[in-house]
Image (cartoon, rainbow, N blue to C red; front, side, top):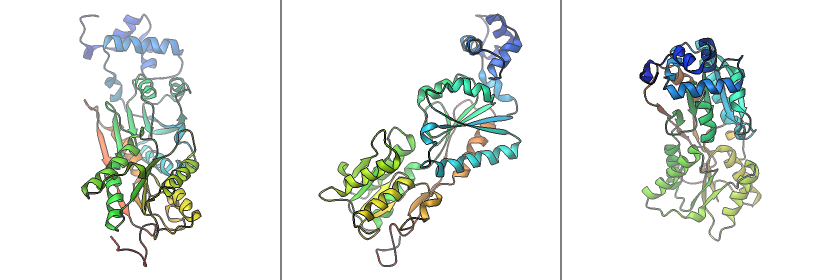
Length: 339
């Protein structure tokens, strides 16, 4: 076996090397039920050791897809974004005759065993996932696509987060705002980090110095409602508070708006507020929210379409456009120019 070319390694070669039947090898590589996890891991280790080309598994027609959402996103605050993404993936699967299953998982959930019970041909991961968790998923040998996350070595589909942050901030600058703050989630999340970069780039391009005191992040370990309120209160408590705030998503922006109103401020006269995502509740607040619109169902469909492509030698990274939607949280009939 040592002389065999990795690209020529077959299931029978692995079976001979591992001392089990070809059927056992096939079930293990396809993540099908009927094997112990010990046997499954032994087969995968043997396949990796021999240099088996897991792309061979991709050539079969995809019949089952599992949509994974991290537990941290399986919340009421995140649902307005990720539910349409899931629906877009489901619609794309239905058109192709693919059965879609859903799992909310975390690092301590035994994701490999759970995935085995679903027996998918491919996997979509939506939102932030720890690299270690993605590594465990990739070890299954299943085709894998990330949605709303980007990591080197993985195919992914993302909205244009950088451009969204840039457009939001340029809009506020165009209204004559001079102290523009930002409320961020964890910068460990790719989408949040890119939106923050767009915010800073817009300030730089306009010749405005970024003031780190005007950037507030949600505290670790708190829910979005509490974290966004605390972040907005910290900005309002500054000796020279912001006259505009770009929030990393709409849910945080709506909380920030309520916080301003509770402090006796008016929106947008005292503070203009911009969100991101254009969730359904963005138009239901005290002032309809200016935001960046993402076609969330399209993101889900693009993830499925990427998995249906013929085998790619290198990871594919796709970016979906965003659109600035201007509403009354930044401009109204009796305030400022319309831009």
